[in-house]
Length: 465
Image 1 (cartoon, rainbow, N blue to C red):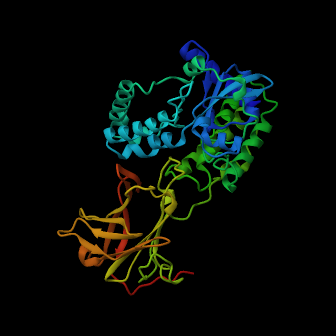
Image 2 (spheres, helix red, strand yellow; image 1 turned 90 degrees about the horizontal axis):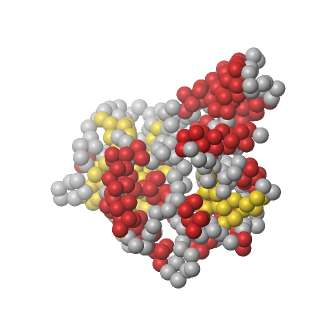
């Protein structure tokens, strides 16, 4: 019932703003189900867009260009709706990667990828439809100039290349309507994140928020929407039904404003009760979020690990500091994040760094490098070499080779003398993963980590419990 109301309000708002009803939509979070398709069809919408993972889970098959780059039909009692599925790789390159590249280089890479798709449709009777869709607008703030130079290069390249034509979904469907034989037998329920709903439900905080929302919805069931106070109460409830709130609860995504979002969510629910003349539950006065553990755990003592890329003993990294890199990507969800954790420690003569990573997500068949900016314009480069890695302090003249190894993770030695570290100093460190065309990941997203590197009193050790 509430989902239908949200859709009806969206259609009315589009009609008011543009003078015509919308032809189709990307549902909130790209979320779809057979029940949602029925509601969407009832509202007169003719097409739906979602993530390609939904297609593969629906058909129970592997990735196929002939299936991905064409519309499909979904039938329901209210009629039929066309569905298109976004190319996740191309969409995520724009959303997460190209902002770190030179615009011309990024566009060249993008066009080359499109060209490889085009080659698969040379003899096809119907051209391929490559759907490139981003769920949010927060990618543009990561681009220089909000992406203006990137977009200028991109649309110039697409406009002058006869292999490609930019179209809306409605334009393509009008020119190449899907045939009844292209109907999906069923539809897998899921979202643009991993093809499921785990981003919004399952964690104890998310479930608690859903419980509070359900209780408020039940309390308002008999409240008159036409009454001024009743309408206001329902508006607060509808705001609390938005998907963004559940995105921030739990430990899936990080933002410095998480406590504020928690407070605002509870304020909207509280206002829903009070405007309806009801007493809000006492639980809404307390935060939903647990107080999280610090993202950066400082070292508790000296370490001198064996540099072999393996956990040689239980104790060698036990007293090290730790930065959870999965909590350093702000509002962006990146399913293919490679670098996971940064460990750091010292023994008085040297700094030790360990980088936990998902080796399966390193650029395949491409040159890659892990770079560490370690302050004072000093930079360390770690590159693959004959199934191992080579580390170099490249900012030194001449460059200095550093002890390094990679097996289950990367281990690196940074001598204090070469870094110019004195007792009591901190290490300003930033970590990047680079591919042939530029930066793929950077931690933190801006600035540096301020790490304890050389305590003035190395004999003081806090024993962990």
